[in-house]
Image (cartoon, rainbow, N blue to C red; front, side, top):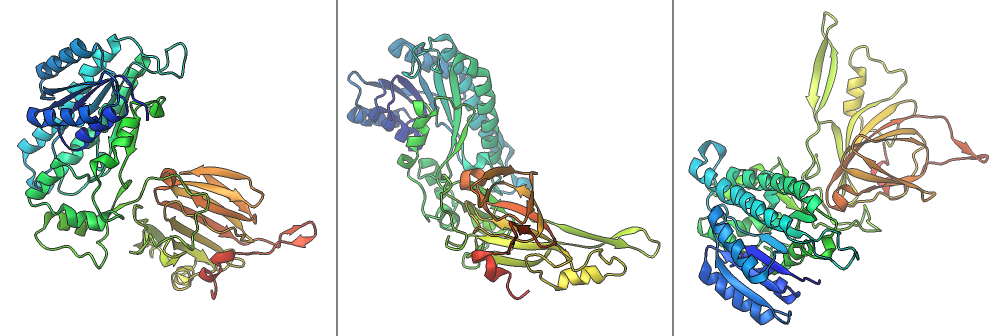
Amino acid sequence: MEITGYAFIAGGASGIGRACAIGLAKDGAAGIAIADLNLDAAKKVAAECRAEATAAEFRVDALYVDVTRDDSLKAAIDHMLGVFGRVDYCINCAGIGVQSTSEISEANVAEFRRFLEVNVEGAFLLTRSFSAVMKRQELKPNGLNSSGRSPGGGVIVNLGSASSFVATPCMVQYTTAKHALIGLTKNAALDNAPYGIRVNCVCPSWVDTPMIQRAKDGGVDIDSLVKVAVPLGRIAEPEELDHDVMATPSNVWLLRAAQSLQEDQLNTRLIADGVPPTKKPQRGDPIHQMLARFQILMADQQTPSENPDLLVSAGYISTGWPAPGLRRTVRHITGHNAEGKGIFLSTDCGDHHRMMGNQQALANIIYSTKETPVELNGDVDVKYAKENEPPLHIHNGSVVRMIDFAPNVMSPMHRAVSLDYGIVIEGEFKLILDSGEERIMRQGDVSVQRASAHKWHNISGNGTLPGRMMWVLLDCNHVVHNGEKLEEFLGDLQPYYEGR
């Protein structure tokens, strides 16, 4: 991608900051200031940038900067303005990582404050300082608008984390700081938008940086965690995500602000189940203790495929209800006591959990009845629902069925000759009819299917997240169209409803 102008990179002496500096030099940046506490390392990166630079009069300087000190930042900015005249890009890779883990009851207060000081207050001071500079400088034409008044006041990129979106046990200091960074980024983007300044956040998971190495040196078994948690089974290299970090200063993200780009085999989901049987935790290892409580699963962020297949895709749901990344649904069944007052007969997670489509979907029967009206005297209906797994729908009865879908899964085209109420419980789905018409449905939206042929596509999180829907299926009379009775067909779903 094409980069022009001048960049300031905090934490540029190693890891992702170093990769971004070299990438900017390759892509045409006119000048770069590499700011870090480790000045010697910053000078080495500056030399690497000079060797890779493509701009004719490229200049790079190494600066000592402490992002937690306002005076240190001021000196760096004064240097930038004195040498380059302006700052077009500010990339904040400065931060500290966890070297030892502990539960909240044993968390170190001083360490917690240190994380807030560096990862939150440091980011605040950096964003505040460079926002002030960019507000004062002239808007820079970006080549897409002859007036030059499109967003060209500058770009600020904060480096977040998977922990900006989810909580990880035994890492309260890191999770808190990274969550706060998202709030800081969003607010800064709103405040800066009128001045043509974009503020965004890039959120990787595990990347092979000195921060990760320090965690390993402190006894954290990152490698074992990555093998369990990341589908590719390996940690990412810094160079693998510099493209998206640098996309934010380029015209690729020209109209995006307050965005949090989840990178590197994300999104991250925490599931309150055990780890797979082949990945048992070892006692005493904090990371494995963490996995014993929460299985961390990653899924590539990708555009939904045009032809996802429920029955061909690799297995996703392997540990039973619920699907990874979705909360455990609780069902409460009520009745009456001897005085006729309402009581709870049972509280559970539904019945007849059935895996479907090569572990790509999982059905949960919330309730079913065999007759209308329903007999509620005694517990005949309760026994029927618990003891009988229903077919797709029941003649003269009803079925309430919940289904969890793996990311980006599409069901086969099918028709149920019944009246179906479909409700999106979690996620986002596309309802596609056999005529080619389609609608997007989001959480709380309802479809009323009147024996129409259709299929469902889980597009939650742009095809990266699991989703959940619930259907209430009621029996109906024969449906006739143009003198022909419409027949039920399930296609590849048929085996999952046979014999019931």
